[in-house]
Length: 244
Image 1 (cartoon, rainbow, N blue to C red):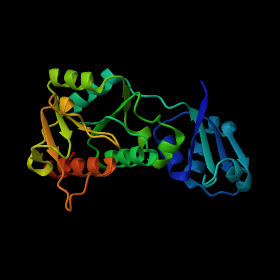
Image 2 (cartoon, rainbow, N blue to C red):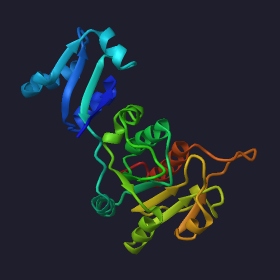
Image 3 (cartoon, rainbow, N blue to C red):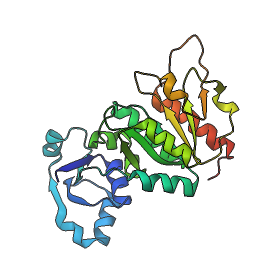
Image 4 (cartoon, rainbow, N blue to C red):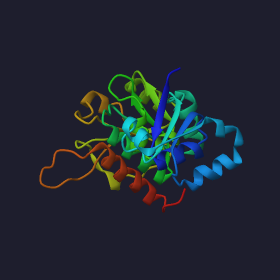
């Protein structure tokens, strides 16, 4: 299995906190990293995996690394069935997208999802979404290592299966029939968004339990996916009186 890497202080620290195993830790000489130093003191078996180099050498290979690079195994996607069962049991939210290709988008989605504490999984299609790469993990400041990410072949089939299990599925679309803050959100639910360039189809929307819209002024066309999902998540959080 080929190695991938995580760069930057906060992404690396978050990866360690999540228990991600690393093959090598590249650190700039004389770099003060209290958390890393404490971690290595407690885990002496990991010291042999640390390589120290000059900051200039690291930056030449990994620009904007902040002097630390963690080499890890390829990102492991979550199991679909296990993720759904956990969401139902813990009464959380699934965020499903018909497509995401921008690392900044998926990074921001994951950060808000972790901040809200409501999200039990992010659902991405196999053929219209980016792979979770080190760049995406860095953009999420490590949040993508904390939230299950599922890749699936057929989002429409997935939605129908959720409904059979009693999970409400809410579409977020400018043609929605209910304003997003007028709907009562009973967990567990799955919130479905379009892609960065295409809305959900009329046929797909008919499969869903409800469709909500986020009002926009001046005939503005659409919101960024990460912004739209953030607005919806915090409305759900508000309805729960900001309590988990």
